[in-house]
Image 1 (spheres, rainbow, N blue to C red):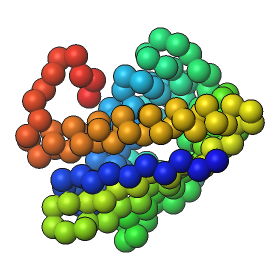
Image 2 (image 1 turned 180 degrees about the vertical axis):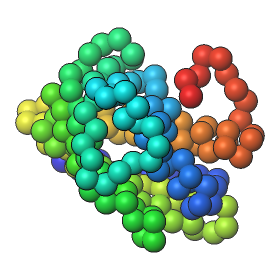
Image 3 (image 1 turned 90 degrees about the vertical axis):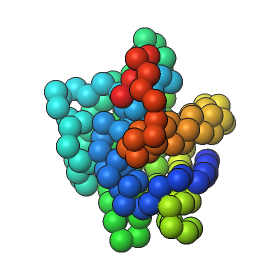
Length: 160
């Protein structure tokens, strides 16, 4: 099954690249619905690396374990504004995620998350969850980009 969720961000492609290339941004945009805890200390520091397998423990609402989750970046193309990962975990055999974006006019970016999901009989439920979760992620991306521009207000209860 394919889930496709899109939105617009008030930023430039360059602004988005500055954050989207950082694995720690995943922690921010997924929070508090999902939390990713790396097996290896520091694994989410720096920038995403194509080919590297990120072995993570996945939690729902910070406390409900959902098992292991592996993210492997297969493509980072700054010219085409594309990032692709092949992912899998305890609940999904396939969770392949493509991010694409382009500036529709200066300061406004059209952003798309496309997720290929294969989870057996659970696929329809996981597909529905993906739609909810990626809408949440996109709202969190907007907040992160606002903070990057210095417009967001810090909140002590907001991770990141």
